[in-house]
Length: 550
Image (tube, rainbow, N blue to C red; front, side):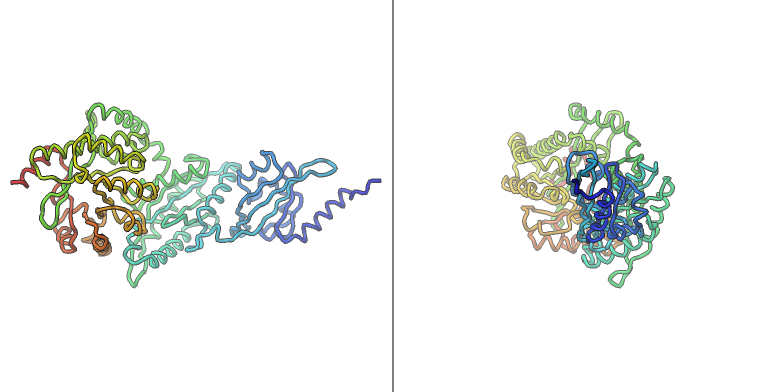
């Protein structure tokens, strides 16, 4: 006699069990239709049992395409995910999700049990602003992609980066910087609708998912509203402070159809907005397509530039502020194209980086600068140090010290007359490797300096650990100091810090007598800039060296 429980009673028993489980639990069949849910599922979604059981699991707001694909398109009987549930009221609720597949005894039909377990809410929140964090934003964007694909919708992603925020932190301190970030978050949120998602993804960077922007004009209106909202002063430290932002916009599906592409497209557009002067927005689509043919042609020409000897070095003197004598030269790369004339490094260096051409070009720069410096010595001019800025890709080669040693031996230049400049950003890409390379270079007797100091990494502890000799104050601080007391304060702070660490300081971009006077007053060691000399070709520099020696 068959003593198994009839199927209809089985369902009732299962429903009764579901009711007494504290976790949110639902059951769906192999077609994805939701069959049973308990009260906890209703609580975390804000939907009724009737609404939920009319849904297919693919329509359920907690699932992104990755979850669905893994459950229904891969073999197995157990899956584990981290998901974000959006309550009917718009609140995001993070949960760990366990999915078990079981076979119905009579029909052998596959059933799937979904169990939602608590996860710490801060795993998806930025603790400072209480906004969603990067992790949360990516979940939201993934779900937005699924919905937009199903409904044939268009939406936008905004990448927002505050301009010169580091100056606030360095001048007033991080506690005031945090206050400013909270105020910025509030203003950004006020520019968005309830269905939009604003996230802080770290530092002074924010991402927005604009769901209601079906047209380019819609996204542009929001971007303009944000820029206008940030234009009003922020009251900090009993004074008014101003902050602007650069915004990049990508549009689904035109600028990408996955999370990574949409975010990186908006990120790239944001950097283009910064290069164009900050406090503005740029579209990703324009960046992807505009000038693509010209860039391809430029890359093809750049590959031939070395063989055709179209590359050349200009030199900008570095002057000792006590003796007023030239003590160093920075080598600056130029490209003299037979058709296009002098091409700016800003136009071809990014192409060289992306294509890998920066490696042979970088070695050519070092060899050429060393040869030229040795030539000046042989002609009887006093020895001066030549400085070369290394790109990230060039610097982070394990065999770089060996290559430079070979160039020094080949050219006959003494190692102490070569200076290598590395930016803070390059150092922090792989700190341990960078530290090892710098120590090897220092052991060779090469002079080392940090370029563009004050614009990169926020922690200064590395200065006590790395074998650097000098800091170069970024030209943006020098440029602003006559009109901006904060820039002047940061400049003085850098000089004081460097001297306490027994480091020399070079002021870049000195263009006025007032800037020079301030540098001397604060005992800066060296300067370079148009006030003394712009970058000039070797034959003009020879005349300058000759005049100094007479």
